[in-house]
Length: 169
Image 1: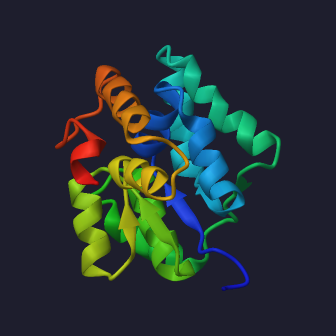
Image 2: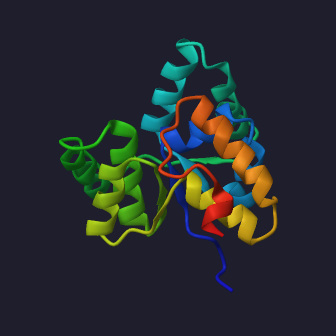
């Protein structure tokens, strides 16, 4: 078994899906201190809170309690890749991809362009659906519970290509 799990860089949409659906604790319990939130994602979450999505504060509370470790500042090579990626990605996704690439991490994003960018760079990638599926496979939650969480994510604005996690198991 490896000494430590790879860092998981979560973009704003993935974090928002879990926070807005009331399932953030599942994400935190599954990945804990391997979760990473970039400054760019924090800024996007803060903008969401200003627009009235108070549930997003759960991420800041997790950072404040040291349940999630904040990302250290970007190195010059990370920053250069980040700037390059801004031509096709938002700042949150670009920061996650740049850091995961240079730090051998995993990106959690539901953005198709960001996922393609990860594939081009051979960066492991997952998303909200993959995380819910994994929670079922390791028997953390029942498939019916995952279906209910996915339905809440969709109700809060998540575009999902599937309607039931149960169908993926």
